[in-house]
Each structure stands twice: as structure tokens, then as C-alpha cells.
Image (cartoon, rainbow, N blue to C red):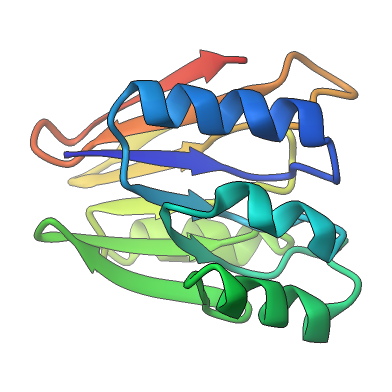
Length: 161
């Protein structure tokens, strides 16, 4: 099963729509958002996916973000999400504190740790844990990117929008 991963969308609806189109084209049903939607009006773009999200440091109106998530059947996990998807243990954290991100990866508790915040896309491995930062989907300071994660192969690929 493939999972769509993105972060730091920062209200950029055009790139959000491109990401959603890519995820649909790939047959993705589950999407992880590692924070910084920024405004609640962008959340409905993810309708039809099993959306899991955490807060980022630029997410302003928490009440309305939670309300919009509820409207589309998404699940918001506050600052941190610990999920099991297709037998894979996944931790999702925005990444505001680099020490926390590194601790999650080094803990060995997760098959996959997803962080955002830095806008720098990467995939790395520490022991059995895959660490993914999908980069920034908004693309203001770099190319807009998302990540496709294969739960069966335990592989992740950064994709430019």
C-alpha cells in the first residue's frame, strides 16, 4: 500500500491540488500531513482521503483547523501522531524541535518517522527506522515536493510537484 506524505503546504492551494491529483493517480487512500496547513480553508482539498495531520508552528486557528478536519472525516493528532498503517508503526511530528525529531528516529519505536518544518526533502535510514521529510509542498523557497511511501517495501520516494 502506498501512503502520500506532505508538509508545509502554507495555504498554497495550487500545489495542494497538484499533490492531491498525484496521490489519486497513485491510488493512495491514506495521506499524512506533518503540519503547517496554516489556514483552515485548505483542509477540504483533502476530502476523500484518510487524512492524518499534526499541528505545525505556523498553524494559526487550531479550532477551525480541527473543525475542517472533522468535516472531511480526517483525524488530527495535535502535536504528535503515533499510528499503525498496514502493519507499519508510524510517528508524525512537525519537526519544530530537531532534538525531538532525532530522538523519535533513534528510539527504534517506529518503522517510519515523518517530520517537516525545515522545507528540506530527504529520506534517510537509522537502523530499521526510515526518516522522511517530504520537503515543502508550497515551494516558495525550493521546488515543491511530496513523498510517496510504500508500506510493503518500506521505501519512500520524494517527488516534485
